Amino acid sequence: MSKEIDKKLQQRNIKPTAMRELVYEVLDKNKKALSLYEIEQQFDNVERSTIFRTLKTFQDNYLIHSIDDGTGAVKYALCDEGCTCAPDDLHVHFLCNKCGQTHCLRDMPVPKMDLPKDFSFESANFVVKGTCSNCK
Ligand SMILES: [Zn+2]
Ligand SMILES: [Zn+2]
Image 1 (cartoon, helix red, strand yellow):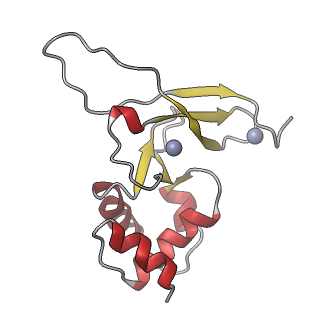
Image 2 (image 1 turned 45 degrees about the horizontal axis):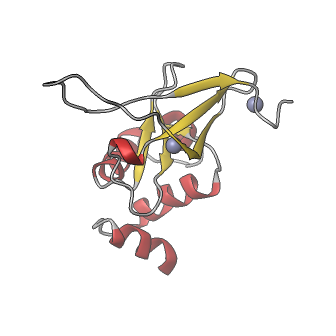
């Protein structure tokens, strides 16, 4: 049991459980966004649906955000503290065409969105593609 992780979960009103701690740990130690499949690979004998439910709880409470980078698999990464995934909280993502990894560019906010009258915001994916520093 990790006090540090429990605190992060509780800050988001998520009740700490062993499973939730483990999934958090996996997301925290990987410095890139992970797909459900990649997270599943880190565990032995854990049902995919259990991991998926855990991710859903995390996402509903803004502990993580999901990224649709166009590869067909939704990826997940930890949110910054205080993030509510509102337009102002969103950042650009970078998909490397060589290694297929998606990185959060946390210091690059997405461009300001001035939606037409009566259009309401739900989500945005801003994905830049290229070659990452590891593949250079
Ligand atoms: Zn790369
Ligand atoms: Zn991100």
